[in-house]
Length: 223
Ligand SMILES: *Cc1c(COP(=O)(O)O)cnc(C)c1O
Image (cartoon, rainbow, N blue to C red; front, side):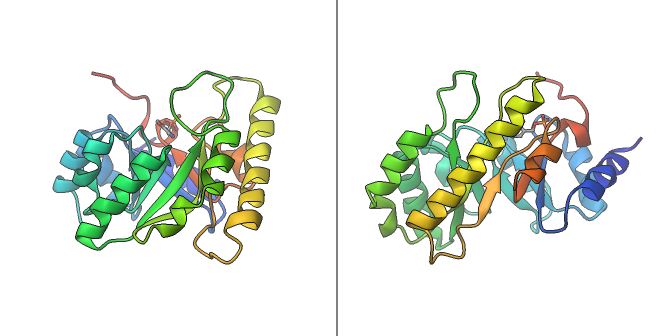
């Protein structure tokens, strides 16, 4: 099985209106090129330095998604080319994206990361904090950082009912945000959920973006 075989198997399971982000973190530029040459142009990375090196070596028409914790002092490096920052978890980060994006006059799609898993995590809004944040309305002043939806990572468990319930709840939360804050904003439309082990459940529960790494590229070699 080649990487392109893996890609094609996954693409067959994904409806055409669900976006597949190929998560290439820790994988080589050559591997990314294999997938790119098969016609896939949407990739996700979670470290600024690694993304920056890859972006410089790869074609300009790749749509890059940032999916990891982003430090404010690194926003400026990726803003000239990033399409979507899926892991926005504070007002501080959002204002820095706004500031840097204004300098290069690019609209950046931003997803609010919601902490939906059972495991503790330092990152992501809780459901309550997210509502609190949106209710404050400060985000309405943004011109370049555009909130386009939400992102979540399910619990790392074999309990599929648990995972499905987490996705279901995230979808309901999306509906609530849409109705209460973004009813007239067509760009607020994305629910990014589902990874290699659970993307089929995520799609059933309403994902519009799935982020798939190891099922395409194989296991990551950490160094
Ligand atoms: C690494 C990562 C993925 C992809 O994980 P796989 O299990 O390899 O598919 C998806 N989303 C985020 C936020 C990640 O960090």
